[in-house]
Length: 322
Image 1: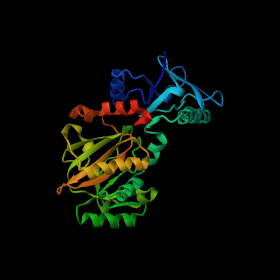
Image 2: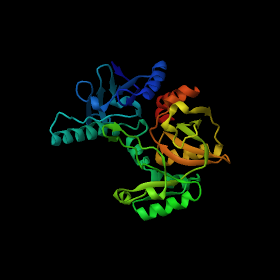
Image 3: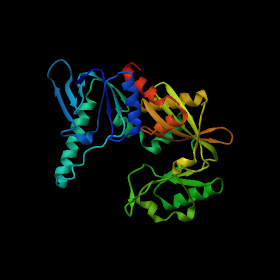
Image 4: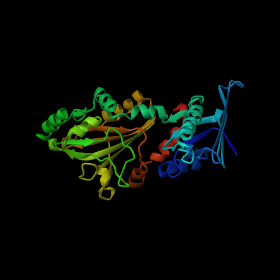
């Protein structure tokens, strides 16, 4: 079956969040073609022609059950795709094949005639740098915790000591990456840190140290096109991700200036959607923590009933008209 005006959903095989959006699109009878780049081969075929015919690019993306005409792709929902690793090939052959998929399949999608991307992978990559996020947040008027990114142990100890004299300091990774220790997956939490813990291993790579916010709650904000969904998360934890069973949820009404600043933030980065983490202090002020340009939100819809998947469906169906 060839689908017209299709929405492409590019994601891994098991993605409950994408499933929620696809269910909403199916309910509205919007054609959806879902695929994972790792399935290239029998389960995924791509073919594109350039310089042949009036359109800049023509061709198809085909799965066993669906086919998308490349001239009729309205939107691309880029979630959490997996790229093939070709483990059965020799190392050099594996690297070559993987590069061809990224630049072949990826290049074809980038060449499409101006679909709406939610979000474009190159924009996601550019938005995923915490130091740049902090600088932009400050320029847009957000309060940000005093922060040091350094590979200098002496400077790190000096900064952490200064913050410890007030409300304390924390450390967190500059970017989450898959990591195991002794075969056990390890997650990089936001953790308290004191000056005595800092040694010369800091020289190996830049580390992020930050003043601890005296918060009373966290707020996760999902912006989808023109929609803003804010949820106050109560936990009493420094990093609420450590124990989901202890969390409480409440729909939050953001001040207009905060909501507008978040939308401006995404505009600056060329993103159609993003998940923001804020902290609320005892005075009721909002502190910027970070942006996840492709964050999880499905469990928040389940907990609060906020129509997040419907907002994504609205955005994807409107395409660039939005």
